[in-house]
Every structure is written in C-alpha cells, then in structure tokens.
Image 1 (spheres, rainbow, N blue to C red):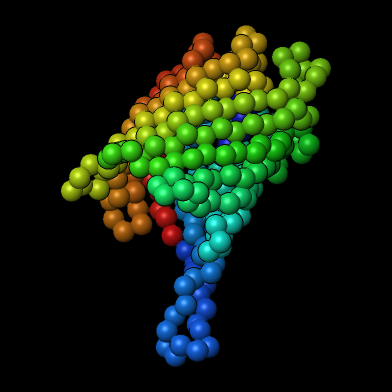
Image 2: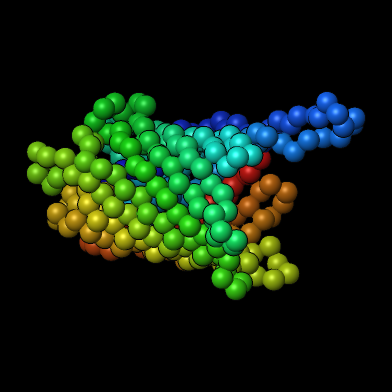
Length: 254
C-alpha cells in the first residue's frame, strides 16, 4: 500500500434518513422506498487497511454515508483520520459508486469504482482510482464473500525506484458466521496484494503480500456495535505500521 490508502475524514457523520413516496392511487398507503440513505460513525484503536496501519498505530475517527436506489445503484463516501506523512495529510476520503444485487438465487454481486482522495495532502500525488467487484452468498451457517480490486497504472502508484507507474491487484475472501441466539458474529479475512500497494513495497521492494484477520463483533445497544480483531500482515516489522495487533472498534450505524 502506498503505506497509505484507506481511511478518512473525521468527525461528523451524516446518516440515517430515508425518502419514500406515497402512491397517488393508494390512500394512506406508503410505496416502497426508492432512495435510502444510511451512514455510520466509528472510533477505532488503529485504522488498518489490508493489514497495514494508516493511523500510525493510533486511534482513528471514521465515518461514511451511502445513498442507495431501489434498482441497486448506489453512491457513497467514507473517511478516516490518518497518519502517513505530508504526502497524504491527516485525512483520507474515499468516494465510490456502483451496483449491487442478486444475480442468481442466493448470490449477490457488488461492483463499482472507488476513488481514494487526500484533501489536505499533496493533491495529485496521492489520489488514485480502483475498480472493485465481489460476490457473496450463504454457505451453510456462513456468509462467504470473495472479491478483487484492481488499480491500473497511475501517477500515485510508482514502482520501487519511483520513476515509473505501477498497477496493483488485491484479491480477498471474508467469512462471517453468526452465533445462534446471540448478537455475536465471528469473522475471518485473508487477502493477497500484488503490486504497488504491497505491504513492503517501499521497504524491501517485495511486490506481494498477504494480510489476514480473525475477530468477532456484536450489537451492544440499538445502533451501537463493537468489534475486536487480531490483524496480521506478511513482511518485516515497520514501526507500528505492519506489526500484528489487536484492533477494537466502536460503531454507530444510522
């Protein structure tokens, strides 16, 4: 990872409004919602993106908002406070949009385009685009998701010598299992990076890397949930950026 990527704008999060229409022909009957607005705000002990800390091992404030249409199309933004040096500044803002829906019984597709922005960093030196796609479905008691993100060669993705552009491929799989009769969900993740965003691309020119995590989450009260995960990434230790760690997060969803 550019030793960066993924986090954002801190502090005030919008969310939680839904727009609906009433049929002209059905008195007092509410029509299905065409547009839904949802959001979240979170406080995390360490903002990890594909295994690498984006907040220098420190606490990060995060939040996002999504506007979805009944057709499956959506636009969204998500952000976090970061600590990656002057090139990236103190804020990452992700802007993305796409489509999600069931493509065959039990299988859901989600595909779109993501833009990583750093509004108070060196604009133009850090931002890049990344298309993404994933499929998910239920396998017994587990919800399984596999996906891929691919960033083509762009100015913000140089090679090790810093003289040429480079691309990046990230493939991953997530598994979530809800524990019956409890608010608890156990989760696992493994990802593989090949390219300019590899964890040690800038420390030893290793263009590949593996990240993983295992943890649990639970709803604690209304829209509030907590999660605890152990996160690891391949490669040598780089200060607090790539050391294995436990990450705790408190999230409010609206």
